Image (cartoon, rainbow, N blue to C red; front, top):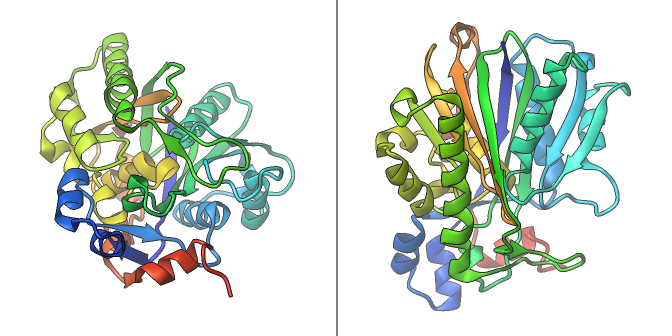
Length: 344
């Protein structure tokens, strides 16, 4: 068996509410909250970026499992907010973790699905006996133009997964669906992304997530009733709920991993933090459907099976502990300062 031998997550403690953002722009907060299903979002601290979030998530994953970090033979960091345009985030992570120098590494960028792409690469490398362990991370401090609709949900966070043999969660199957669909983009040197409005819905998110989920089930013989949990990419709360209903999943099966309501859309960390939340409570033999989505566009789908080893695995603090404990709310001015929009 090959799969997840450990996982970790990191969510900044700062929050800004939808009410506060709406107050600044003179918009109706209840309309926005009802439309997005989001009530607040995480905000990175002044010294937090995609690299520091990746390091913290990876440190938790390593702390929870008894391995020699020098046995990690590959590190892949997926993000669309890498702190450097020319300088890898993955080498920063490797250095901070003390992995050494003998490892494969690369930064990945595929909008919000770069983290799941890293899991697929690590899985393949472990299966091919190229490495003993691979580390895949999805991390972002997502950008949003002040006043844009994205500002209500674009947030920060990340998750890390160590892939190897004898796992706590077996990767039974994976399937990807990809097209060239320009629903969301950011040109080089542009600080904020552009998006195609409602075009980001049916032609982009729904087509790819549904196609990847159905492709996985059709090609590997699964049906919705086989899964105890499902986690979908979460740009808002309404999209994953609608996808679940179309595919035949109940709200109960997705609620544990539906973290977007209280932390917003963490982009490359979105579906992966949701997966961490599910694994925090999963039991042996539980099966999980995971489907990511990245604009541009594509989705990676996974069929995951929890093994008996999960019973001995330390799972505290949980994702929901991090979401709901020790929160610090900021006003819009402090939010702008944390995002580097106001300087002394």
